[in-house]
Image (cartoon, rainbow, N blue to C red; front, side, top):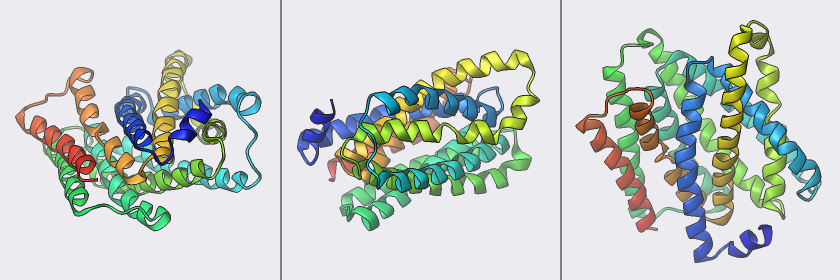
Length: 299
């Protein structure tokens, strides 16, 4: 598997595989966001998910993949710190604002700064057509946030700080996307980075939320752990897929395609959370999809 992936680097087939990884990550990332925002405390939901994928990754890190090269340990430390800040900001935003408003702002802020970061770090550039597609996609995403902001009735008193936190979280999305792309390209075996990343990253939130666990009714723990196992599997495939996409193809294009997760999040809200999807929201969903298509066709 590793040899096959490495053989695809820099090829047209590799770019197509990267786009497939990014699209799968978009679908699963929307599921992941909904799992974290569900009826449980978002801090504890995230902690259960992180603990689950850390435990799942441990045997692969220690017994399956090659041992990380010495220069990878500082990179893992940087990834741990960036993701820790991102998760704290995200949980703070979700605990203060409606998912259908906060999620689009987080995801809309990320790709613009990821494209800029990929230009600075990797020398990647977008064509004028791709910038147009990015503008169309961002217009649809932020349009979603504004539309949902006008129609929601819950959490309105905390919406302003929630939106500020959502923008800050989006900046960290861009930071971890470009940094993780750097990290997975810095090791010979991409699965070494993935296994050790998930193992190390799984420690922070369970420790950070320890006091919240002690105050939780015992009847809630089983449901949370079940959600954690499902979310851990989704996270490994989703985040792992986008990391592999950034190794095989363009970081900016992968980041843009991943943000079609906003469309899938809206569908989840409609199908699972009972939210209405009228003609305006359908038009915004079409705008997001069109922007992603333009970015790919204008490459």
